[in-house]
Image (cartoon, rainbow, N blue to C red; front, top):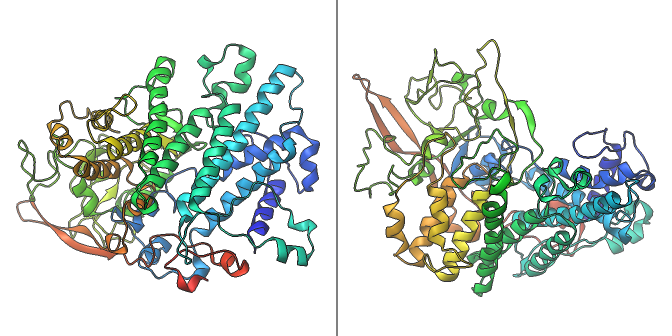
Length: 603
């Protein structure tokens, strides 16, 4: 299938989908493409369907599982596709990332249909003239914003150095192409797309963000809208839709990647400045606007079970009352599937309770015989470890993790136990207990962009542009990262009240502070599917990616103490490329489609 054939199949999927009540109603039976334009609801459905394309949770290959291709985590099943990808053994017919290429172009097809000749914008949606103008403008803004979003996802996933030596992005498509109306000769001659340059893709995304911003409200908040009638179109009931401030956040993330060493060979400092500028704009909105009425507070904990959490910049539609995360990450001994284990490398990234790295604290000595004592408070809200006890929805009968050789949660004891002897706590609701008469479940959503992501982006960009303590747009990198280190943990525990290590590392210069910020990013975003792309944008050689990863072996002694072996190898990364492959069928069927380097057998 050629690229636009994939795009056309996206339209067919839209026309065939059943009615959905999330944002807009869609056609309930297979219809012709022209049918879309006969009903204002189906025109809105072109936009509404796009939101359903977005990942809605963290238990997939662009969420937590992708950390299994890094030094953060290991997938439990040896035959898992991400394990084989990390080991360099997948074939062109089992590409786990092709689905995202297809999804993104389906979304782009939808919005291009809406935007072409302003046909979507000129549709009459509401009888009231003023409300109709507000709605059609919002939908047009969403179309540009969604195209920017899908394009950014394509660039993040598939951008890279082609076999021709150029840094390439994706084929930019601004119009829909319906192959159903083409002869075979026309298809062969017209559908031979080439990838645009990485820079051209950046500029297209930024342009779409800017176009979106002109039409969208800065945010979907009732307190920002003057009248009750306008709130129906622009207010908080549209939480979950893209808005103006989200497009600014997208630009910040795009420039952050484009400024990074792998994609910024000329070391252009203006890219860092733009990343810092746009990230700061989002930070300022949260701190000076959202905190007034929407409840945002820089010290407030992230609540993974609140789809309306004020830290969110953009999130998926929530799955209400489900236990997907708990089933995925709890071990077999607690009726979970233990699909992913944190590595020792990630565990060691968390320092001590006073904010110092392991072995450097003047207050807390790191004890290998008691390795989980007096650690960074964030650690306890992210990872389950040996001998940790939790109430697990039943305080009268708590659950204790047993990772020693004979323990119920030990690696190898069950196919549903982590291989590393660590289990994931992040995203897991502690009130779930499948043995209770009434099982308490919470909503889950994917927080695609949240407050912390922009703080991390600003701190990194500001430091690379001006250093740790020089203000950039009114804030220093040191001041920004202090906001995160002092924030309440996911478990509601106070963050760092004083932070002498931050003062110390901030006077060590750009390079030392950059390494420190990378570790902060690792701690903050682990299991969110971001670390995979971060380590690639920072590194310039495959040797920095291909390394052993470790778990811990635990021995329970006769006196009930434990002995820990932290040098237990559980896997090795063996990438042949720093980039994801362009889907094989696209390269085979289009002579102008250039593959990324390192995928010689995929072309």
